[in-house]
Image: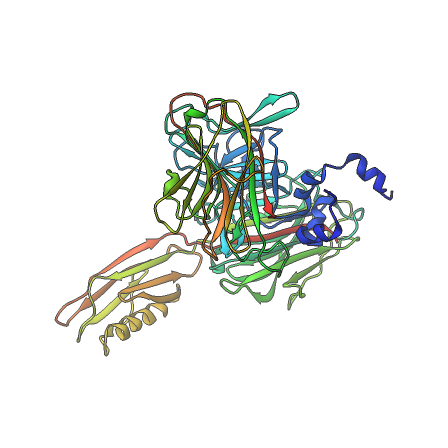
Length: 264
Length: 351
């Protein structure tokens, strides 16, 4: 039966979601169903510090690596409001423990981008790329790290400051900070002077242009105070979220959306 | 925002890959992210012989069945080269153990095709192996939809390209008869990347392609009418092993070196010119043993010996006599060697 345009329009996703079907290097996840999880290499999902687990949603795949020791060994979906759900990635509510979520740490993964080289079009010029998340926090003071951004495609580290290259927006006990690392140097922290208020929902966006220069957006606007940073040309970077509790108490962190792909 | 054709063209898959979105009977997987795995029926993935596990990628699902006992209970993704990932299905490096991967063994699986009823269909896989001589079986093709078997020869019906210790062979089984093996005379060179493809036409007749070309020697075969067949990959390690010989000091003038392999002493080599020349002579002598595939100088004072498949072979000793000083050899056995097998692509559908 010929499929008419009218029939397609009746059932199709919105264009923003649809892109994940036709763009191999694009991820959009809004966490509406519980994922399947398992340890990479086999076995049940592990809560051991440094273990790497795979997490599969219908349209997207992630890895997550526990920080500290977790008895809750996987994030789960929880309801935020009518018709809206999110990923609860608190794991155990233990001081200095948490989890890192990432699309994968090899250059083969769809959201691994080679700075100043990766192109949206095969054989084309280098293209900009971005990572956007929508997150809500009930108790912002309980985060040591709640970072979203890009880092070098390298092995998982227990401490965010140990990554070799990184550019993130990081909610640290309620302050929204920019943190960067360039080629193994010390972390450079810049306070945007903006704060995350308990119970709010914010969009964090980190964009990398075709030359590797990084810009940030909080709810679609540049931060009040920003910081210049460029990734080194030729390195592969991956989007990631790094979360640590600052107290043995709930943060109420919920990831509502995770979007990554080519685009300015 | 309206999405223009230009914008779609900027980001879309190639048409070949895109087919997995709109064709329910088409699978294309290029193994770029780690899968989730679990035991079929529930629980953590199992490594017990005969266990069947489910393996889920973003765009494709597989089952894998354990051959032998595995402590590594799932394949995982490994980088083959910059931005190119692949599935590492080696599991434990244990002789005669391995894994079978398939799209599912019941006729509801998207890649289950009914002979004589389905139009022509095919299965193509792109693989690489660093040591293809270490495979008992590394087979890609179609088999009857039936329960998993521990031995590939126990399937009732099958047509595969099978890399057996580096030789690419066609193996077929019909109606439970004995396996018919045909050597294509094509070989799998270490570390090469090869496409293996098995095609079945609308009548059930099977043809084969190696890198898109018919094998040098082929074999006629047709599946029995009305059978359901499924694409599968069947892998077993061979029983090859290797020894690494490390000497503690350099050879010196007048040293006489005797290696013993499987209890038999080889003729002596005498120090010649310098350390590099002498250790090369010793390696060459070990390589003359009929159970040795290769003996290679892998360090200034190291020789790696790779044995031929099929036995518990060993370098018993390398004894040096005469000369001012005599190096002592430490021999480290590696009971089972890696094949370095990596699956880069898995593609199956109607032709």
